Length: 410
Image (cartoon, rainbow, N blue to C red; front, side):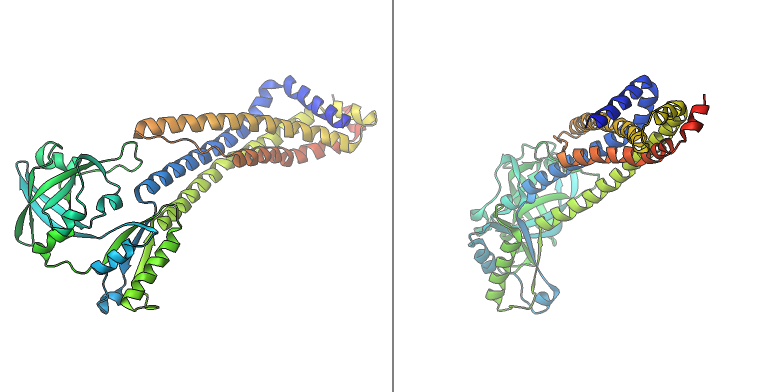
């Protein structure tokens, strides 16, 4: 133990004696570690924020659609099927969503419309945030009320203001025009990651009860798909399996694969995998600087061996073992990279917080870097490993010097 202490002490003394050179030697390690820590932390923080936003917007949502076989056999989703699914304990709400093209004329001009026919749980499924008025519900759907909901952005496009609750909107669809009363205006969730954009000529989205579309399309007594809001505390896959069993039982179609499932859980998993791959690739590129830093350590250590040839000769002539000389230089390389690793970790954490603060202020949301202890530990161990690995060759060269040859050199 005392000998190891001496090796460390000698290594530190030599590093302090050559501060400038030692710092330049550590620079590559510092940059590499800081880059990896910052990138991984920002990636984790972004992923966590996205998961939180997606979970708020669509966590627990399950999309059930009819397969081509179901359509061919005329086995559509029926209103009674929707009610049967809604009665499940694991289900919070169910809605359908059918879109139609239309148009309208206001004092601001002519506008193309995307008319979305929905069910009574539309607000829940859409995770709508109301700015004015209220969303339509069960009564409006049952009575086929001519009411509609639009966003505050679209309201301003149509009327120049978003305070439009109670105003009428004439919707033309399939050569028929009907007047709908605006009952609610939605707005974007504050501090959201996902921002909606509009462009010139973009259709205005109008949400209406699906029963109010009967005059345009005929009786809507069957549907291609439905969106189910499951209890977020439950496994979406198990809830989806339960829903499929209900539909297959009602349509006597067990084993026919009439109904297809897509859940937000699957979407989140895919997005996390993609973001993880991007973060890993960028971290790998940043990690290359660690190898460059390791080569720098090796070069400086080789220079150090050349400069200290006489010292090595004296030590060997006094009885120092080959292993002692080797351990001395390995300790110096390891300490250099360990110090560089610690500095790099601190700079990486500080950089991650700084960049996340800039991103948050620029995008109007809050992203906290995902600082991982395991990542820090791996980075520290890796930096030390780099120092030891690239220090082996200079250490071996120093240890194998002949004491006679070493003493001959000035």
